[in-house]
Image (cartoon, rainbow, N blue to C red; front, top):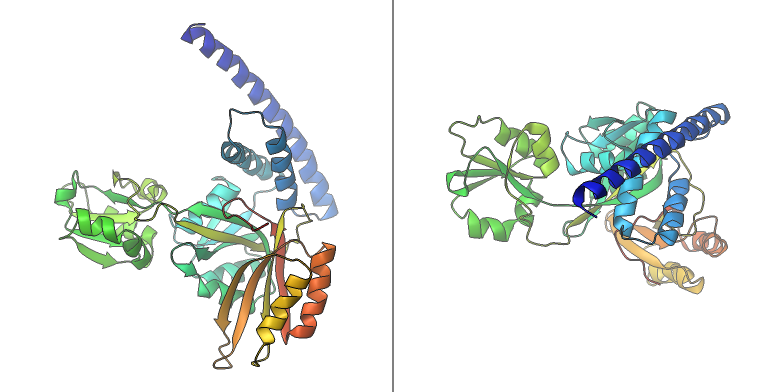
Length: 364
């Protein structure tokens, strides 16, 4: 077959795909009407995961599992908008990595609302100014985000879903070459995560801290093309928003730089068979108290994938523990473990059970 014949076949397939997408959209509209009548939430992460798992199981390739998730994630976002245009608050400003996480999860056409602080994300959802919120929780190189943990202690909102975004740093500038760059704006973490590259390639440039990588891109973009000497380290997405071209791509020192985000709201996703549950608990400041509490999980063969101590502001030298475990509160083993864990702790709160997102391996 020649290339024109193959292209004609692709055109035919594209027409078939378009027809099927519109048929699926019609069914999504029906679902939306039923959800409105019954009061069910539009965003259903458990159902979306079930669809992806089923398709991954029957996928014969050559599409990879990652490509399948990306394609159907976009389909979910587009068809979800036919049910309802969700308002999603995120930790801004526009162009931040949290904005990117929200856009990937809910689509560019969703009503994505930047707010100034992580606590403002929680407040927007609590006041029903937004249906859902997106906040960062941990980074592979920078560790946990304490402000997010603090916000959970002051809120009754639940974790509805999680996602991972690769943090890829770009040099963005109106400069035509690195030789023209005299100063570089970025968030302190962005500068730190590109330290070796900067020392090797821009050793004489002034490094200037900004409140966020998105703000850094905005500052560098404010210089016109003529006579520009500033650059920013940020995402390609932020560069697109502010019209700042890419000068160098993917300059971060560590290739596996990833941030985990939570979607917060009032939803309680149903079990999918591949879930996580996030907890926070407080044990007495006595020898062996934490060991006994964690022993409950071991006895019930509940895998713990994350633990982070967090100081109790009102009680110096005492700590809360944030923990992720494998499973859903609807699972028998985890339910029994939580019942026993309450007896071993002074305080225990379940922050949410939600489908596990691809991005970090879970121990078996």
